[in-house]
Image (cartoon, rainbow, N blue to C red; front, side, top):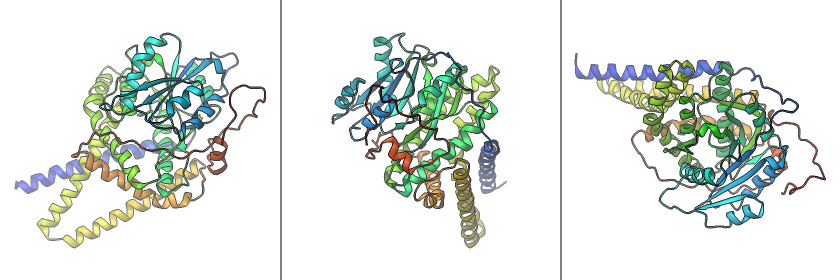
Length: 438
């Protein structure tokens, strides 16, 4: 058999594996047309004591709005405290947080940048300073704004046996640019077609998605936070699955997350995530596979996801190589161009319909939303390119993402609609703490 025929056979085999991987997620996504069965709070149920962790670098422009919404939670104020890691800050983030009553830990380490390093550093100190005082930890980013029922919803799920609970994430600023709108749509799509179906099957989520999640401190097993990749959230989740834990979605725990407004900022952020997706393979996949071999079949989904970016990237490069090789051997360059254009058009239309279905199912609305739906295929197309790049170009430099959108909870709700928003409880004029600032 000629060498080129062997190469062609190998490339086609890889392409088929990539197609099967994609079909796997499509079939799981078919279970997205429904809702989760959620437990209701029970009278007299246990109220866990929460440590709320925020890692912040130069977030003085936005962090006060997060602190206000945390102060105003519908949860006993004496049962949670806010901890802020002021990570390599050069502004007054630490002072703002101290004035708001948070415990502030200031970290300076220019050689070990990134959220994973900051969280590991924090828990080394937290486990000494506050040993045995808290039951659980909730993690937010400094740019987040949180609905009043977040902690109550997380607490209820803990009381029903869950150990890792992920909140409902949506964009804080979807109308500020098409990039921010597409990023908002991405998180809604992930929740509807990736997270929700897995929980309906009784499986674990594959990622806590970086922010807006809570976990019982017992998950850390007394060893602290131990992650090494650019995607500390995925690494944490998959390692927890390998230890027998399950991450679940809690749609009633709503929070808003600032999305990048500029295309280049979004690309830098998503390249970091793509690189992390490659880095987790040698760390998480063997642990998950051992879990499967021990008899936990639910961990199979974690194994498949852990190698997913690698499979997608290799299949993408193989498809391009096979098309070029075929055109070179047959001289059918015009056919290659026509097939590429037809495939691109089909992918664009299919992705656009997918985005439209997402906004319908999530009952999402914001000014300029339809522009985001129309351009969403471009957003995902860039993701695909970044996955291909991350396979060969490995730059682990941590690039900070600036946050500048300072909005109160009421301002966000006035513009952004999702069917997930709970009814607001009337403010108690006798309650202590700051009122919602604008």
